[in-house]
Length: 364
Image (cartoon, rainbow, N blue to C red; front, top):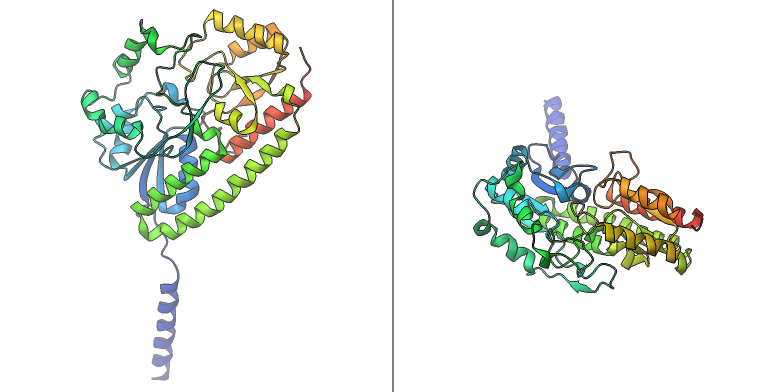
């Protein structure tokens, strides 16, 4: 009898203790979400942890500008509770994919609320504008079902029919310097290149996850707090790194125009032979003008990118005597364990690579 009483007491104690321990989230219970590219995927994983199952469409070292969705992508989107997108017309193929997938979940535009840079002629001073929740991006998505054909996931020429139409003779979509930015709206879409903007991305992601999975909201907000502390710490570190550079040595050349937010935050001037998209082609006039500017301003370093063909930048370096300062990561993570394995690694690597090159490069 005493043994039975002891057994029941121990059993009750174990039951009480078990109630105090949070239930483990299994893969089957995890919230299914889709992110459009690897940087967003990393952010969502950092905040969501094991409570979220993340599928990323454009993977590591992938170029979102030229990506073509697959049937597997449509299947993942169809099953997702949340579809996280950068917005600002960065993913020109997304509306077609969401339409084909019959996506009925929540679309989260992670750039809502960032301080955007308005598109102007290349080389002009950029002006910031606040991108509110009711901005044109949401309206564009809401109208997408009327503006795209049914069942439109296509890896062939039809997938870019509108882009090709715009490219053929529609000069009003091109800047006067020859850069064709018809793939984007009126703002630079590369908002993640600002750590200040990254905090807005994180807030938007956290709020969406907490709404979709309220039982895990506490965990999401705890992860957010830790992530924000790391973002703020890195921001301070990068400012300290760049502050050591003289103002006269803060102009560099990259493959395409993806670093204007970084430049605005840290006082670096970025020049690029290509426009905002890796799909745009630099004209001979653009390249010649850039070479003249490099020589005239004694620009000491040029950089290749993980998502762009390096040959043009390498040619410019040879003709100007500038140093190829290394590889930057504008919009895609490196392989895991590489120099840009996470978003914060990417930002630190880019800053350190730029500072090292500008500090050690010889003037042409």
